[in-house]
Image 1 (tube, rainbow, N blue to C red):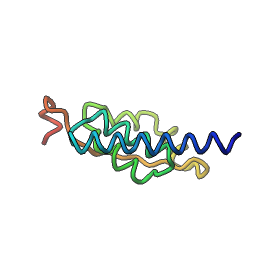
Image 2 (cartoon, rainbow, N blue to C red):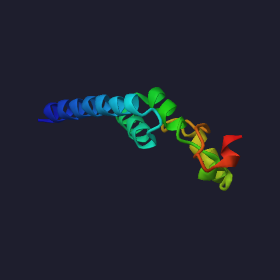
Image 3 (cartoon, helix red, strand yellow):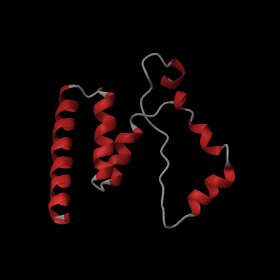
Image 4 (tube, rainbow, N blue to C red):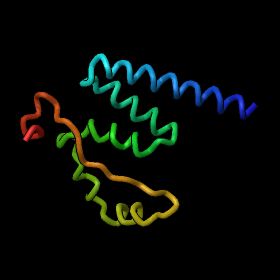
Length: 102
């Protein structure tokens, strides 16, 4: 039974990826499709590809500086070898975000 569920999940992720990539072929600026493709790739264990897609959605108004508010917590997170993390600050600004376009 567990193997069948894994196969169903794998098939769903593959189908979702195909649909989302097709949506992005039609409209490369579709931020929703970019986000869901990143989540799909993450769920499929393709973390490097997911990180690339998540990075496309970042802008200054999303307040990246908040990560430094609790430095001790950040230090614990970065030093936890059992739960590696990747921090990405990148992406395209919203059309109305003049500061983020610079």
